[in-house]
Length: 171
Image (cartoon, rainbow, N blue to C red):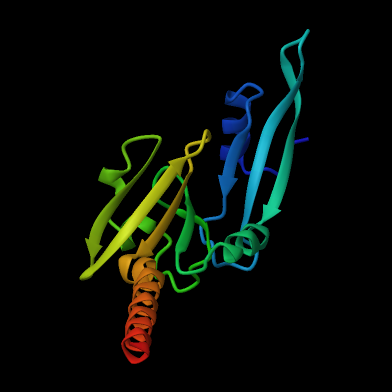
């Protein structure tokens, strides 16, 4: 029974001939935002679909997982057109990641990383394309990426100065 499915979704799932098809809400911020996984069900002997199996996953489930990874970085799941499916960055001003970060020309491989200056801030990007055409994108400003290293360097310098000072006093 496929009466409850949008016609475009039904056609795409039936055209996929048993392969899994992925859909997502237009606005990742909406209260009812979700991801739908669907595939047609058919008898192999008849090669005729008798139904469509769908599973809706609430976007809050993805958000709760991404939120745990958001320490000093921004994580995005996007579709093949740059539409944001889920993110821990709740301050994102657009549903299109490529409007905020013009990185589509740099994402030519299945996975990779690169640096880019955006709004005067140097950022590190890494991405991985998924088998369904979606991608995960992680970005970290270099200021935050190097903050721990800079603090460790300062600590080493202070301990060195302290050790040298104590050595001089003991002579």
